[in-house]
Length: 155
Length: 307
Image: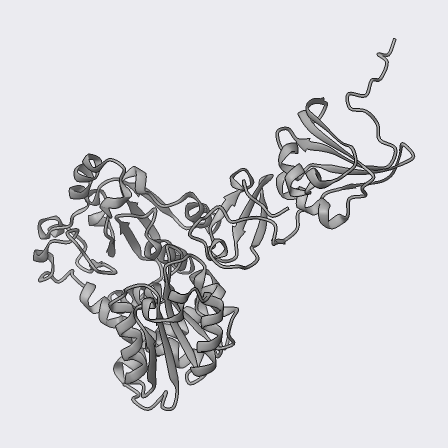
């Protein structure tokens, strides 16, 4: 007999489910997507069992349809994430996140001696995906960082 | 392929192709042989040094003047509006309205790139923090070519602080165009950063890592010495122990290749003892002189006076 299917995180009526988030990254994504200022329900699932990933995180956002541009911000921190757009409890659109070639104004360069941390200006990073490892190179100081080294960003 | 650097910013070595590097060296060679005192007549260079520099600033300024151009600028930011809080962007935008080309040095990484966004006038990066110093690398290549009559396929050892030294990073990157065999000689804590090693691997450049000059000195054509800075070490005892391992003296040169040349970006502190100066292997003072011709070539090329 099949085990009855049970949702570990409650379903949403309208909004976005960000699935297959690398375990440990969901809290970072809350900041990247500025979800602490979202006035509707945001549900977080951390370290959920996943057939493909072992463990995964998951974010459900009520009453917000994530744009492609926002989804691509997620790609830097969790390139395997998938986006499900929900209407009336049904998935109406599903897409994977895509790593952008460049990402502007989001990341704060971890190099304190970088000019971007010392003048009022936007940051600009080139994104590389080498052997499934995301690396980011600052256009200005030219230093290369792993995604795990990026701790500060503009929401 | 025709090389045209007119209007180009010279900010970072990886942006220059092999052909462009060779064109700069060719022009530097001809300017060394045959000075052109009127080539940049009526042009003005802004010399913007936000941080102290002796060789780089003086060689940029004399390079411009020996080509007939004029120089305005500052060597101390304390006398400029930077002291009042003006941004680099604003300062550069305004200076760019007065001059034809800007040579600059600044303590922050990425400052030269930022400055280039503020003006259409070419920016020549004379060092931006710990990031790049492309004119140093070009004069290093010019010197290697001059003393070895080629750059391709040489065995080159880089010695000293390879972790923080911007000159060794840029030189290693530039040498990827010339199929060099590189030997990195440094204490473990100051070895070449992983990202540079990865770049070399991707470009199939042979390199190896060593802890003593003696391990490589007899098998290289160029020994490129740099200074190990005491302030990089948390443990000063460790520094005292390590610093004497990376000192070159004339006895160590007994069995080297006859064509070996010792280079150093200078200033040296104690890493090359004075008895090396009088050997046929010392070439660091000629190297410093060559900065003049390479900077002349760059000025003339970005101003469209040489191709």
